[in-house]
Image (cartoon, rainbow, N blue to C red; front, side):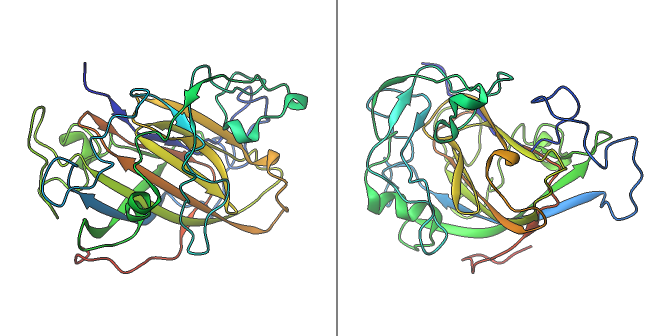
Length: 302
């Protein structure tokens, strides 16, 4: 079996005319705004793990789901827990056809609304998505010296001519030289070894941010990539791309979330790289995201 391509692409898209049927964005290329930053630097936590077959390895890394590699949903609950972390449900299912909105964009199955012109997806059977149990999943986004090491990690989103902000590992100066999003190569536990290019393949990334909702801003968030990615806005699951899979994409139109104009909301992002493959990471956003809730980590921050 060929390696699964790990392409992370988060696209918090500023959708211009014709995209998702929205109007051109305020602050686009034809509008000059003095308060628009040239970049957004977001700081999150990367946690390094060892694969399941080595001493002190984590059971969920290099684990093949019972129904095979692919896209799984329903593995995490619709809401975050009291610590702001995703909760393993013990359930879930493998996706056949994707859920889509009226413009054909993939959307989270939990946001499906036939009255909006959405098209329903299909299931290919129940499965936990290669997650052993609640205890193993809790460690994905929590420090535990028995199984992981952590450090802070910056991602810098550059403003584009269309007004969007982009971080793309294929274009970023550091990651393009590494041939992918490998933030902890030769760090923490070190590279994974085994077959394939010499990289550290087994890690998670957690990012907590805040933004102000603008009902006239055509705000949206699109993620494309793999492996597992979950995005929560105001504590609610809005992107569900669980499982060990190739590059996949989902979009959330913030106007569908019943947010209050001018109010601040949290956007939390959780990602896991669990399988040897390429690793790509892309973020695009018109949200002026700011980092919040930085936890303590086990390694010094550069």
